[in-house]
Image (tube, rainbow, N blue to C red; front, side):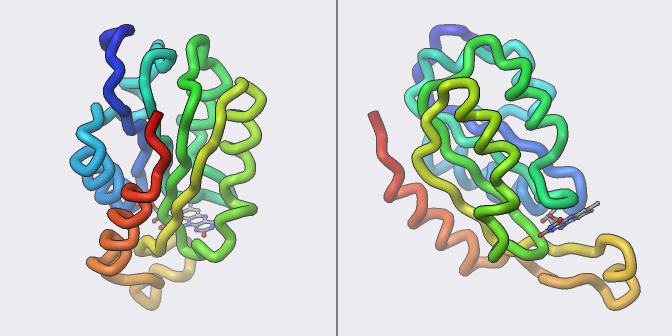
Length: 155
Ligand SMILES: Cc1cc2nc3c(=O)[nH]c(=O)nc-3n(C[C@H](O)[C@H](O)[C@H](O)COP(=O)(O)O)c2cc1C
């Protein structure tokens, strides 16, 4: 990993159905960003990056533990970030992003915007009925994501 790269970067985890991986791929393409899993980003030097997006599915009301752990141990965090997620209930975004947002702010990072959309969810008994949010993220979700990217502040 190059310490000096100024390119944007996307750091993500996607462990349930690959829902968030779809967002991460679009973000990387739209921003011409480098794409890292949380594991690949260990030791990541974000200081020179103009913008970093960090996200995952939501599991029990928070982002994936690999992302929370990464931020807790981030020696050189990026200055400017945005948060993204897919979730069974994205309407709870403000609350479900809080654990990650709090950690980032504690590290002195500026969180400039946040995005969440529906993701196919078959956790627990939902599996019996085929889950909720089948086929999400869908084309409309991904178009909203592209519009979100266009509104992001760039330094
Ligand atoms: C173990 C588990 C716990 C979950 N907890 C929540 C939750 O608290 N709130 C929510 O909105 N969605 C919850 N979900 C749904 C996931 O956030 C959703 O399916 C997401 O799109 C998964 O992303 P991924 O496929 O990238 O891993 C949960 C899913 C799993 C498997």
